[in-house]
Image (cartoon, rainbow, N blue to C red; front, side, top):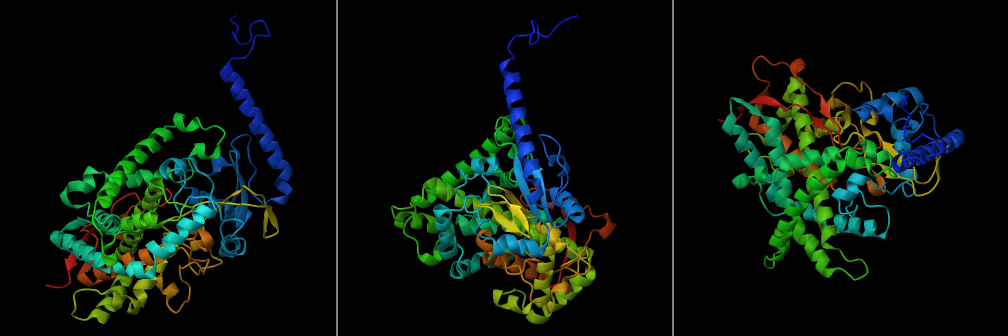
Length: 508
């Protein structure tokens, strides 16, 4: 009988690989034992199994798995995800505890492997840990990049891109068109012109740079639920799974694009304030920065990626779901169109001054945010210190997820939550600005998204014009029940299938 060379003689040393594996195994088991000892003070949750903890319960659609666990164990649950102690919140009441009552104690971000590789060592706004640097760049965003005054300067860009969207749709009328693709182009064009001062959809640049693939990779890589993210001591796993090579490739492509953009801007002449794009603003901030906290070129690239990738994807997803729900619910479409056309009359072009009068359309957008939150599980927070929530102790360095998707479908907060019904918001004061925790597509508190005004303007103007300019229906032979509404999970979540529709011009 053959004997393994590791065991032959009974006293031969283990190979280096086996020895390392044994050390890792012992470490993980000790952590598991420590976690069980502390469990009595933690929120309730499902039992964990050795080493992987509760990872096996996340599945391919974590927002759904977490919702089911919350239904069984309560709206505040504790999970051991590999090496990471984790708390998940699934109710508006407890979201308020996290994002308002204990906002400062829970204001940091975990240093995700993917975020470090994509965002220049987490020097962007979304993933930067809480501290002086983050406070500085958030102040720059609020005062310089995304203020109401700055958003207003880009009104002409929004109006021109909405007009181009209408023109692209009209070219296909009355045939069947891929509306998802056109909405993606619209969102990308608005962001590129606002951020870069360039239109990348002309001359084939959109396809040459591979924008769509870059954005899809970005949102999948940052989904935060890749196996390696939960074993930070086993960083080599990212190489084994192929995650590291995908991150490097995506980062390289973004970085090359940003180098080109910054070179173009650095060589341009003095620009009037009303003509500046957001890269111009950042470069000006860099030139005028104090020596105490200078803004590096990599810092600027990280902030650009925040605005470009996050802004494009969430805008496109919201519009795509809005049109999907409206063609599936013709009664809502008719009501929205009657409202827009009643306000505009025979005038063909929607103005931003019309938007405050479109109450039902605004209710539709809120209902989309509730029913199809573009970021289903908000970007995780990390506790800076021990904190008590709902009588349970949340230790420092615990990862905290808020399941916005589950909160949007919580029976405690919403009547008939599984039904698309914009009327929920008529006569209601609930808004998505971060003060009403039943509806938090942009998050809330210190880590809430500072681009709410910016995103809202892009979404509302486009939706109003689509409702006004065209009558919409599904292609012949297709009914609402035939549509595949399956979603692709990531840091943001879009439908897997494109929306194909027939658009008939309302005006001759």
